[in-house]
Image (cartoon, rainbow, N blue to C red; front, side, top):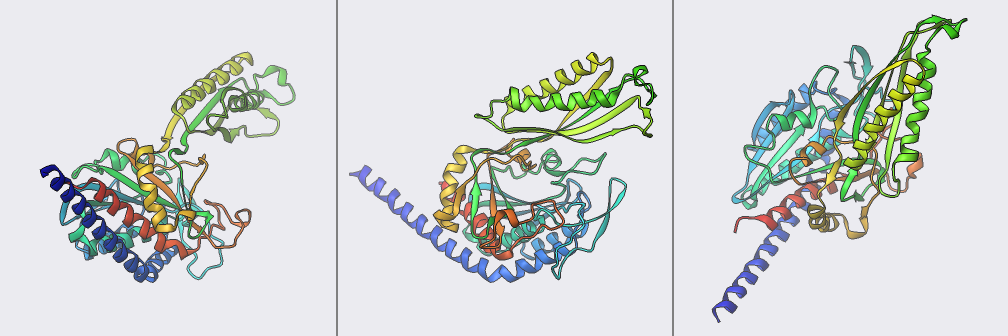
Length: 435
């Protein structure tokens, strides 16, 4: 009889907790709708005043001012310009981190909108146009809105929320550290220790109102390589006196293309090896002594990544030697695989479906783009998903891709973005609250 009473009590408590969580989600939805115009205004301000990686000074100041106005504990200067807000709920429970990236790109905008960027900046010694050509302005605005919503229901939160506004997701300037890797290095996942992290990215090729996700490898690792070929210089009219690094490099480039086509099992995992830059010579009639080329490697599996690194070195070295040249190869791991913890993903997909409608949450293919959100996921379970930003009725083929001067997003998805982030927080806390 006592056991029956005990389990009946647990069941009743579960029903009460579920009802309370549902009520909180109603408040979240109402607050998100009421904040929509405010969030759009923030986003347009950030869009019109973009800042490059590790230079997000004004952006950080605006974020910190807003968080402080909500009574949230604020840390600034994290990983150079990052801002971290800590919101302690009224009840004990896990620590949930929510992340937004802040930096813009060295791209000159040509979208005809009233708040288009006219900003100029310096990127690796060059004067460049500056534009939020990847939607980070919208990420910041939505997370600021999410912070305002969660601060309003602080007493009902079963745990702590850590808001991470991260600089330099696109990569730090030459000679500098930055981004998620530096935030982790500086202890952003500690004090208090974070249990789980959620992040979203706007997608210009996904219709507004939809969310896409993928368990396990969702986005590729990004490795950069530099290959230096040293041969023998000669007059262009007597190439037999040379060891031509340009011809040698051409053969190496073709050889590198066989790695994916002949060494990777494409039925299991996709991969990319691309050469994006070749620099050599000063005149048309001089065969130069040296050549440098640079490229990227993208993989969705660590074993494939290791194999490709090995093959790049083998192919480059052997082709260079066969030509009488020498080769130096440097491969740098820039970004890890964005790996959505499969158990966490399975548990949280119903939350996304409840926010967007089950028919609007879509399992998607892996992407060969990279995201430094992966550095958080390397330490703790994380879920990274995509939020629709393409106007309804548009064709994906007709929309400009990310990182281009014509990049454009529809702001109609911001309410869903805030709801998704808030509800992921509430549901995870509810699942893992201290009993």
